[in-house]
Length: 465
Ligand SMILES: O=C(O)CCC(=O)C(=O)O
Ligand SMILES: [Fe+2]
Image 1: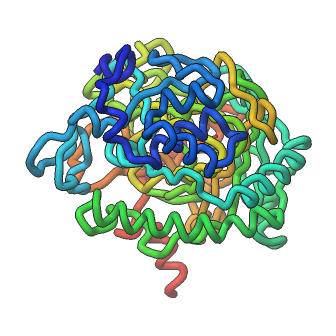
Image 2: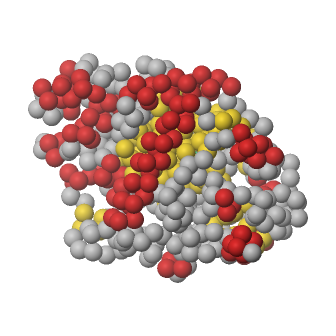
Image 3: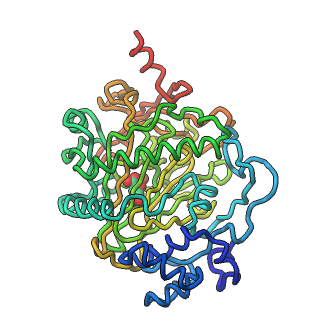
């Protein structure tokens, strides 16, 4: 595995096997200011040799070693390294409700290592994500970036509770929704980390326009994933309806040190098995993903911080709820977060990452701090990230359980114990107060009863009566 991360020299013909699209993505991430067509011309002039192209463009070929510098570490497509094994069979560690693709892949990341992926095929094979490079026409991506850079001047940092301390998230953000009534609902009915949001905005013209492109692409990717990775059937609890984003959570990372810690996105209002369309603009940053390792594989997990309104720490349950739900947790245990290794996905300007329905319950993600960033011609040192989300009506706080504290309970997944995967994940409602600054969580705990499509059975009863 180390060979993939730190190999000094790729096989001489490895590059030749890579699709031009991958080579262009690598070049574009290193030279965001150079037009796509120019990159292609120079690449062709060098017979497809990426290193020679980079030398001509005035940059040294990027280092072969993984690291957090401004230049993304370079690694060829895994397809060049023949990692697929013959024959059908379940992906190691994959839920049984997720039939394997036609070829079985080795688990490539392992404890303490980071596997860097660039090739869209590698990303979809080895992570619960798919990526589309050069997603929007460049002028449209730049216009959205400009608009959001302006908006981000008034973004703020979220605060949350980590153990007994109140910390603020190491980047700024704001929530955008589709309509004025939804804005009012967000302000008055939805609760995040125990407070109501005061800064909710309606989608800007560019966010609204781009939403339709994202919606179309994500629905296509969902169908492709079902066909190629889930054996033709949606996952248990996955919403069967077309994905229809009604909110955009926008993050701004100003400089290499701004980041977001390891987390899974909060399920409370998205419901189980959510799909998220995540558009990256501005400087390239590393998006890292890692599998959650069940506690019976390695007991004593260390809870991760809750980085803010869009996100959820998996281990802020009260002791009673955590025990019942089988969650690991508590201070002081060895950190097993890195047991399955990490995968770094490089997100250049104008790339759309789809986090699929198999992501939030079983994986965590983060944007790691970098030592430096390569400035972007429009954004400077800043990166803007837009996560388009679908707030499911059946998870509107009006209809979900409330705890005795008087506010909507939070929905969590019991992902820390191994269970019969064919049954799908198990979810529970618990007191929201565990991660509210200055509040102690009450004992409220209830297993969530969901139908096959992931809707609360109570919701159906209320809405069909
Ligand atoms: O910036 C990113 O790419 C990810 C942001 C994220 O994870 C979130 O908003 O929940
Ligand atoms: Fe997230």
